[in-house]
Length: 305
Image 1 (cartoon, rainbow, N blue to C red):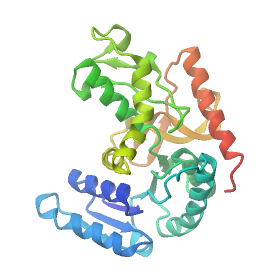
Image 2: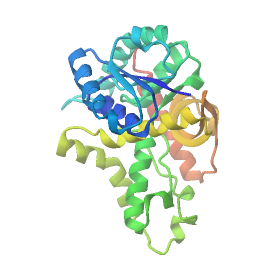
Image 3: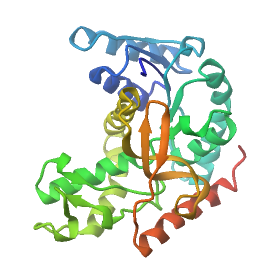
């Protein structure tokens, strides 16, 4: 599965995803598409020249025509939020960009699984699922997968354990209304509440929400963690491992929520989304997931798709 991957957008995020996929040996062919064809060529050439020390891979720039036959299409295209710009204004700008991408990429790759990375990722995942004509099970947003990685990193540091020992998630929107369902969090199978080294939950959640901004202030973008995160999602699809992941998909009644895309526990396999799980939440956590859905729906109601 997933031997050919197309990445739309060859900026810092798109090229980091391509590099991570190359290191993991996830694909045998990667096509980079960007309006800046020279940039796409340069990124592809730079990665390609390291391939003698990786798994064999053909990585090159291309057009939508070259994307034909892709098993996975990853969309990173979009603009970053500018100073003074509202989240709603940013959303409409990137929705408009997606409007131009959808007909071209779905024509070239009607059978692909589409992975949305560009922000606001939940809004764009919703747009793609509702307007592209592609079955919703083949439309996946990275959602809070990156937030979850940040959460696990911080908990591992605070609890002084290796990162794989931490099992915790960020639910909801990839944005301000996200939340940590602490009732589900554990370290080495011990609930966080009872772990010998206690953590400050407020500080941890603040870290998760603010760390992206800290990185952007320091280096003007975030790219490595989302690169690895997206590559890992592609690995799950490729190997058809039916993994349980935390990604953004179009909900159909889970937790009483419909017609919005956000992140809850989701089964991922070779054909995309294979189902979603309603993990038991406390009353306050249930209120938080519904609040997150309401926040997204409010934005959606003000956009033109």
